[in-house]
Image 1 (cartoon, rainbow, N blue to C red):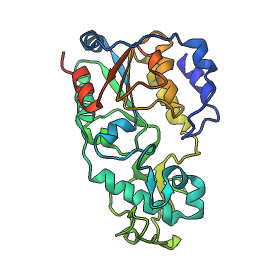
Image 2: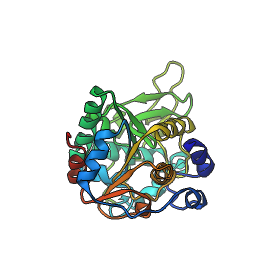
Image 3: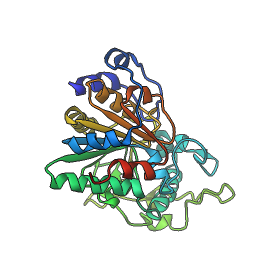
Amino acid sequence: MFHRGLIATTLGVRLGCSHVSRRALALTTTTTSAKSDMKEFLEVVSKAKHIAVITGAGVSAESGVPTFKGDGGQWKTWQYQDIATPEAFSRNPSRVWEFYHHRRHLVLTQKPNAAHLALAECEKRMRKQGRSMVIITQNIDDLHREAGSKHVLNIHGSVMETRCVSCGDIAVNHQHPVCASLEGTGSPDPEIPEAQIPVDQLPRCEQSDCRGLLRPNVVFFGETLDSHLLTKVEKELDICDLCLVVGTSSIVYPAAMFGPQVASRGVPVAEFNMATTPKTEYFTYHFQGPCGSTVPLALARH
Protein backbone atom coordinates (compact mmCIF):
# COMPACT_ATOMS: atom_id res chain seq x y z
CA MET A 1 0.00 0.00 0.00
CA PHE A 2 1.22 3.49 -0.83
CA HIS A 3 0.36 4.93 2.59
CA ARG A 4 2.67 2.57 4.48
CA GLY A 5 5.64 3.75 2.47
CA LEU A 6 4.60 7.37 2.92
CA ILE A 7 4.28 7.11 6.69
CA ALA A 8 7.58 5.27 6.98
CA THR A 9 9.40 7.88 4.92
CA THR A 10 7.83 11.01 6.40
CA LEU A 11 8.23 10.38 10.11
CA GLY A 12 10.13 13.37 11.47
CA VAL A 13 10.17 15.21 8.15
CA ARG A 14 9.60 18.93 8.54
CA LEU A 15 8.32 21.57 6.15
CA GLY A 16 11.17 23.32 4.42
CA CYS A 17 13.48 20.32 4.66
CA SER A 18 14.92 19.49 1.23
CA HIS A 19 16.85 16.41 2.33
CA VAL A 20 15.56 13.06 3.40
CA SER A 21 16.82 9.51 2.98
CA ARG A 22 16.06 8.31 -0.54
CA ARG A 23 16.47 4.63 0.27
CA ALA A 24 12.71 3.94 0.07
CA LEU A 25 12.49 5.54 -3.37
CA ALA A 26 15.59 3.76 -4.63
CA LEU A 27 14.14 0.41 -3.61
CA THR A 28 10.72 0.89 -5.15
CA THR A 29 11.10 3.20 -8.15
CA THR A 30 12.30 2.40 -11.64
CA THR A 31 13.78 5.42 -13.39
CA THR A 32 12.51 6.29 -16.85
CA SER A 33 13.17 8.76 -19.62
CA ALA A 34 10.26 11.19 -19.48
CA LYS A 35 8.42 11.77 -22.75
CA SER A 36 6.83 14.98 -24.03
CA ASP A 37 4.29 13.45 -26.39
CA MET A 38 1.20 15.60 -25.82
CA LYS A 39 -1.01 13.63 -28.21
CA GLU A 40 -0.25 10.40 -26.38
CA PHE A 41 -0.81 12.10 -23.01
CA LEU A 42 -4.23 13.38 -24.08
CA GLU A 43 -5.25 9.76 -24.67
CA VAL A 44 -4.05 8.84 -21.18
CA VAL A 45 -6.09 11.70 -19.64
CA SER A 46 -9.21 10.64 -21.54
CA LYS A 47 -9.05 7.15 -20.01
CA ALA A 48 -8.18 8.14 -16.42
CA LYS A 49 -10.81 7.47 -13.76
CA HIS A 50 -9.18 9.37 -10.88
CA ILE A 51 -6.48 12.01 -11.40
CA ALA A 52 -4.34 13.24 -8.51
CA VAL A 53 -2.75 16.65 -9.15
CA ILE A 54 0.14 17.85 -6.98
CA THR A 55 0.75 21.58 -7.33
CA GLY A 56 3.50 23.85 -6.06
CA ALA A 57 4.63 27.45 -6.00
CA GLY A 58 5.24 27.62 -9.75
CA VAL A 59 1.50 27.64 -10.38
CA SER A 60 0.87 30.59 -8.07
CA ALA A 61 3.97 32.44 -9.29
CA GLU A 62 2.29 32.79 -12.68
CA SER A 63 -0.53 34.64 -10.91
CA GLY A 64 1.97 37.05 -9.33
CA VAL A 65 2.21 35.40 -5.90
CA PRO A 66 5.92 35.36 -4.93
CA THR A 67 7.43 32.03 -3.91
CA PHE A 68 9.02 31.30 -0.55
CA LYS A 69 12.25 30.31 -2.25
CA GLY A 70 14.61 31.98 -4.71
CA ASP A 71 14.79 35.68 -5.51
CA GLY A 72 12.44 37.91 -3.57
CA GLY A 73 12.09 35.56 -0.61
CA GLN A 74 12.50 38.38 1.85
CA TRP A 75 10.25 40.69 3.88
CA LYS A 76 12.01 43.83 5.15
CA THR A 77 15.38 42.40 6.27
CA TRP A 78 13.99 38.95 7.08
CA GLN A 79 14.19 35.82 4.97
CA TYR A 80 10.82 34.05 4.71
CA GLN A 81 12.19 30.87 6.30
CA ASP A 82 13.29 32.87 9.36
CA ILE A 83 10.04 34.74 9.91
CA ALA A 84 7.47 32.02 9.11
CA THR A 85 8.41 29.81 12.06
CA PRO A 86 6.77 28.86 15.37
CA GLU A 87 9.75 30.31 17.23
CA ALA A 88 9.37 33.67 15.46
CA PHE A 89 5.65 33.73 16.25
CA SER A 90 6.34 32.97 19.91
CA ARG A 91 8.97 35.71 20.17
CA ASN A 92 7.28 38.38 18.08
CA PRO A 93 3.72 37.63 16.92
CA SER A 94 3.32 41.22 15.73
CA ARG A 95 6.13 40.81 13.18
CA VAL A 96 4.78 37.49 11.91
CA TRP A 97 1.24 38.86 11.59
CA GLU A 98 2.57 41.90 9.70
CA PHE A 99 4.31 39.56 7.27
CA TYR A 100 1.18 37.47 6.73
CA HIS A 101 -0.98 40.61 6.47
CA HIS A 102 1.27 41.58 3.54
CA ARG A 103 1.04 38.04 2.17
CA ARG A 104 -2.77 38.06 2.39
CA HIS A 105 -2.84 41.41 0.58
CA LEU A 106 -0.80 39.95 -2.28
CA VAL A 107 -3.10 36.94 -2.54
CA LEU A 108 -6.29 39.00 -2.42
CA THR A 109 -5.09 41.19 -5.28
CA GLN A 110 -4.25 38.27 -7.61
CA LYS A 111 -6.46 36.03 -9.70
CA PRO A 112 -6.29 32.38 -10.78
CA ASN A 113 -4.33 31.89 -13.99
CA ALA A 114 -4.94 29.62 -16.96
CA ALA A 115 -3.48 26.57 -15.16
CA HIS A 116 -5.81 27.00 -12.17
CA LEU A 117 -8.79 27.45 -14.46
CA ALA A 118 -7.91 24.47 -16.67
CA LEU A 119 -7.65 22.19 -13.62
CA ALA A 120 -11.00 23.40 -12.28
CA GLU A 121 -12.70 22.97 -15.66
CA CYS A 122 -11.26 19.48 -16.07
CA GLU A 123 -12.46 18.47 -12.61
CA LYS A 124 -15.95 19.74 -13.42
CA ARG A 125 -16.01 17.89 -16.73
CA MET A 126 -14.76 14.64 -15.17
CA ARG A 127 -17.36 14.84 -12.39
CA LYS A 128 -20.13 14.96 -14.99
CA GLN A 129 -18.61 11.87 -16.60
CA GLY A 130 -18.50 9.89 -13.35
CA ARG A 131 -14.75 10.41 -13.01
CA SER A 132 -12.85 12.45 -10.41
CA MET A 133 -9.87 14.69 -9.71
CA VAL A 134 -8.20 15.86 -6.51
CA ILE A 135 -5.84 18.82 -6.12
CA ILE A 136 -3.11 18.24 -3.53
CA THR A 137 -1.45 21.63 -3.18
CA GLN A 138 1.54 22.97 -1.31
CA ASN A 139 0.27 26.52 -1.93
CA ILE A 140 -1.48 28.49 0.80
CA ASP A 141 -3.23 31.07 -1.40
CA ASP A 142 -6.57 29.28 -2.08
CA LEU A 143 -6.39 30.21 -5.78
CA HIS A 144 -7.44 26.67 -6.74
CA ARG A 145 -10.71 27.10 -4.85
CA GLU A 146 -11.20 30.57 -6.30
CA ALA A 147 -10.78 29.06 -9.78
CA GLY A 148 -13.59 26.63 -9.01
CA SER A 149 -11.81 23.43 -7.93
CA LYS A 150 -13.95 21.60 -5.37
CA HIS A 151 -11.76 18.73 -4.16
CA VAL A 152 -8.66 20.48 -2.76
CA LEU A 153 -6.30 19.31 -0.03
CA ASN A 154 -4.18 22.20 1.29
CA ILE A 155 -1.31 20.28 2.86
CA HIS A 156 0.45 23.46 4.00
CA GLY A 157 -2.71 25.22 5.18
CA SER A 158 -4.35 28.41 3.97
CA VAL A 159 -3.45 32.04 4.51
CA MET A 160 -7.18 32.71 4.44
CA GLU A 161 -7.75 30.74 7.64
CA THR A 162 -6.87 31.44 11.26
CA ARG A 163 -6.21 29.04 14.12
CA CYS A 164 -6.52 29.83 17.82
CA VAL A 165 -3.39 28.93 19.82
CA SER A 166 -5.57 28.43 22.91
CA CYS A 167 -8.66 26.45 21.85
CA GLY A 168 -7.51 25.31 18.40
CA ASP A 169 -10.56 26.68 16.57
CA ILE A 170 -9.98 27.05 12.83
CA ALA A 171 -11.98 29.65 10.91
CA VAL A 172 -12.07 30.91 7.32
CA ASN A 173 -11.29 34.63 7.38
CA HIS A 174 -11.32 36.79 4.25
CA GLN A 175 -11.55 40.00 6.28
CA HIS A 176 -8.74 42.37 5.33
CA PRO A 177 -7.13 43.41 7.55
CA VAL A 178 -7.83 40.59 9.98
CA CYS A 179 -7.97 43.15 12.80
CA ALA A 180 -7.93 46.96 12.95
CA SER A 181 -4.38 47.21 14.32
CA LEU A 182 -2.96 45.66 11.13
CA GLU A 183 -4.44 48.40 8.94
CA GLY A 184 -1.65 50.13 7.00
CA THR A 185 1.06 47.72 8.17
CA GLY A 186 3.06 45.00 6.44
CA SER A 187 5.17 47.02 4.02
CA PRO A 188 8.22 44.98 2.93
CA ASP A 189 10.28 48.20 2.72
CA PRO A 190 13.10 47.87 5.31
CA GLU A 191 13.09 51.66 5.72
CA ILE A 192 9.57 51.56 7.17
CA PRO A 193 9.64 50.56 10.87
CA GLU A 194 7.71 47.53 12.06
CA ALA A 195 4.39 48.29 13.74
CA GLN A 196 5.22 46.50 17.01
CA ILE A 197 1.55 45.87 17.77
CA PRO A 198 0.78 44.95 21.41
CA VAL A 199 -0.18 41.30 21.67
CA ASP A 200 -3.63 42.10 23.07
CA GLN A 201 -4.40 44.07 19.88
CA LEU A 202 -3.49 41.24 17.51
CA PRO A 203 -6.19 38.96 16.00
CA ARG A 204 -8.19 37.22 18.74
CA CYS A 205 -10.43 34.16 18.83
CA GLU A 206 -14.15 34.94 18.60
CA GLN A 207 -15.27 31.74 20.31
CA SER A 208 -17.16 32.51 23.53
CA ASP A 209 -15.01 32.64 26.66
CA CYS A 210 -11.78 32.18 24.70
CA ARG A 211 -10.28 35.32 23.17
CA GLY A 212 -7.03 33.43 22.58
CA LEU A 213 -4.37 34.71 20.21
CA LEU A 214 -4.93 33.72 16.57
CA ARG A 215 -2.22 32.66 14.16
CA PRO A 216 -2.39 32.07 10.41
CA ASN A 217 -3.53 28.49 9.81
CA VAL A 218 -0.47 27.60 7.77
CA VAL A 219 2.35 25.16 8.35
CA PHE A 220 5.32 27.19 9.53
CA PHE A 221 8.84 26.13 8.62
CA GLY A 222 9.91 23.53 11.17
CA GLU A 223 6.38 22.21 11.80
CA THR A 224 5.11 18.78 10.80
CA LEU A 225 2.17 18.38 8.48
CA ASP A 226 -1.26 17.39 9.79
CA SER A 227 -1.29 13.59 10.07
CA HIS A 228 -5.04 13.36 9.38
CA LEU A 229 -4.63 15.38 6.18
CA LEU A 230 -1.67 13.23 5.13
CA THR A 231 -3.84 10.15 5.59
CA LYS A 232 -6.37 11.66 3.15
CA VAL A 233 -3.54 12.38 0.71
CA GLU A 234 -2.30 8.80 0.99
CA LYS A 235 -5.76 7.43 0.18
CA GLU A 236 -6.08 9.67 -2.90
CA LEU A 237 -2.67 8.64 -4.20
CA ASP A 238 -3.42 4.97 -3.54
CA ILE A 239 -6.42 5.03 -5.88
CA CYS A 240 -5.32 7.42 -8.64
CA ASP A 241 -4.61 6.01 -12.10
CA LEU A 242 -2.91 9.20 -13.33
CA CYS A 243 -0.86 11.79 -11.47
CA LEU A 244 0.12 15.34 -12.50
CA VAL A 245 3.00 17.14 -10.77
CA VAL A 246 2.55 20.82 -11.60
CA GLY A 247 4.80 23.79 -10.85
CA THR A 248 6.82 22.25 -8.05
CA SER A 249 10.59 21.96 -7.68
CA SER A 250 10.14 18.55 -6.01
CA ILE A 251 12.64 19.29 -3.24
CA VAL A 252 10.35 19.96 -0.26
CA TYR A 253 9.27 16.81 1.57
CA PRO A 254 7.02 14.96 1.97
CA ALA A 255 5.32 16.32 -1.19
CA ALA A 256 8.50 15.76 -3.23
CA MET A 257 8.03 12.01 -3.01
CA PHE A 258 4.30 11.82 -3.80
CA GLY A 259 4.89 11.62 -7.56
CA PRO A 260 7.73 9.06 -7.43
CA GLN A 261 5.74 6.88 -5.03
CA VAL A 262 2.80 6.85 -7.43
CA ALA A 263 5.17 6.08 -10.33
CA SER A 264 6.64 3.18 -8.36
CA ARG A 265 3.41 1.23 -8.75
CA GLY A 266 3.31 1.68 -12.51
CA VAL A 267 0.89 4.63 -12.67
CA PRO A 268 1.77 7.27 -15.30
CA VAL A 269 2.99 10.55 -13.83
CA ALA A 270 3.33 13.76 -15.82
CA GLU A 271 5.46 16.69 -14.69
CA PHE A 272 4.72 20.27 -15.79
CA ASN A 273 7.46 22.74 -14.94
CA MET A 274 9.73 25.44 -16.30
CA ALA A 275 12.70 23.06 -16.01
CA THR A 276 13.50 19.49 -15.11
CA THR A 277 13.66 18.65 -11.39
CA PRO A 278 15.43 16.05 -9.25
CA LYS A 279 12.39 13.79 -9.74
CA THR A 280 11.90 14.11 -13.51
CA GLU A 281 13.69 10.84 -14.18
CA TYR A 282 11.00 8.93 -12.25
CA PHE A 283 8.13 10.22 -14.39
CA THR A 284 6.51 9.05 -17.62
CA TYR A 285 6.02 12.52 -19.09
CA HIS A 286 7.65 15.93 -18.74
CA PHE A 287 6.16 19.05 -20.33
CA GLN A 288 8.46 22.05 -20.09
CA GLY A 289 7.26 25.65 -20.08
CA PRO A 290 4.87 27.93 -18.17
CA CYS A 291 2.12 25.93 -16.47
CA GLY A 292 -0.41 28.43 -17.75
CA SER A 293 0.44 27.28 -21.29
CA THR A 294 1.15 23.57 -20.93
CA VAL A 295 -1.59 22.52 -18.48
CA PRO A 296 -4.53 23.87 -20.53
CA LEU A 297 -3.20 22.00 -23.58
CA ALA A 298 -2.80 18.78 -21.61
CA LEU A 299 -6.31 18.96 -20.13
CA ALA A 300 -8.13 20.17 -23.22
CA ARG A 301 -11.51 18.62 -23.92
CA HIS A 302 -10.84 15.35 -25.76
